[in-house]
Amino acid sequence: MADSGDFDVIIIGAGAAGLMCASAAGQRGRRVLIIDHAPELGEKIRISGGGRCNFTNLYTRPDRFLSQNPHFCKSALSRYTPQDFINLLARHGIAWHEKTLGQLFCDHSARDIVHMLLKETAAAGVLIRLDTTVSEILRLEDGFAVETGNGVYTAEKLVIATGGPSIPKIGASGFGYDIARQFGLNVVPPRPALVPLTFDEQMLGLIKPLAGVAVDPVVISCSGATFREALLFTHRGLSGPAILQISSFWSEGSALIIDFCPDRDMPALLKVARQSQPRKMLHNVLGEWLPGRLAEMLAQHSGYDIVMADLSDEKITHICNTLNRWQVTPSGTEGYRTAEVTAGGVDTDELSSKTFEVKKVPGLYFIGEVVDVTGWLGGYNFQWAWASGWCCGQAL
Figure 1 (cartoon, rainbow, N blue to C red):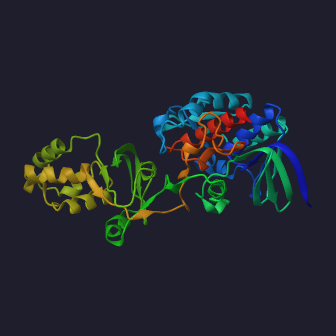
Figure 2: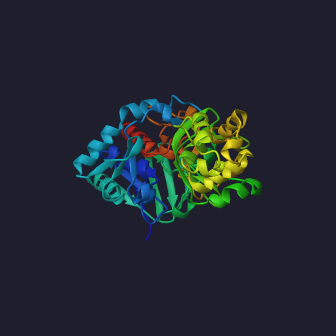
Figure 3: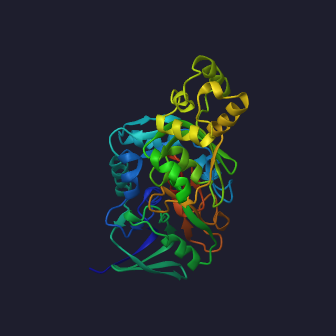
């Protein structure tokens, strides 16, 4: 059935940022409509954190976000903090717990977050139209017209909260970038982020036999960034938190440097083992500190998988270089299919850092993942969604 209406604000995208923005604007008395092409809202919230939603991080700081302008995120993150979101959960009686590195998760289900946001938008009088595809956006003298398969909606202000193309199986796309380009905005080339890394066939010959092996922790470095997290070998390459983190900093041709024994003085330990276990093979000794299959691969890769008695100090130095500075160059990523977020997006130079309004198109706003601000793994990207959505909502 055809539908239509005039609103103060139209928000395209019923994800974390869009829902937060809608409730904030609605609570200020604005007549708000949310439009989304998906049949259900908040799908990325539902599937996040293994169904528990890693909804924020206690250690949220601007230096844990990537952007061509690293200062852009400071205003929003300071105005809407993790504690503000925790307070919102408390008002709705949602229990949560902290895991490692300041990551906060729901005790029960990610659906608790979705239901909370729905209650907030309902209380604010927000109208939601799901399963509604936008066919065209027109600039009017006094606002915008949004044409959909269900009718035409008009509003003084238009907010784009469509996210990026990561996880296309839930309907994610680059639609927000198309809107930005329609209005002449620069888009920083998007790319998959927080994503497993893949390797060429030669390197896979080493990695595939290790599929399923996990090492916790490793210290991994690339392009000036360093993380201490768990690593997982897969049949396609490398994954786990350490790899997802470093993937946001990796670019084609860049090498990863991995320390598999960050907490041990390996030269000293191997020299002691040379004295105490002279007839033992190197890979068996390494197996005391590393998973067996990995110990065997690294010993063979060092070129010195021999009995300990035959290892000179020079050979031990070479072995430790393999253990502490294993260098590999990925051939690519698993792409948007498995990427948790999208890096790049609408150029922050186009937007106000306080309101998220487009500088050269008054009344048009971009928030959340569609903007060129990408957080580390661990709840940072949700905090960016809450903060950017709330701050934009205060300006509508």
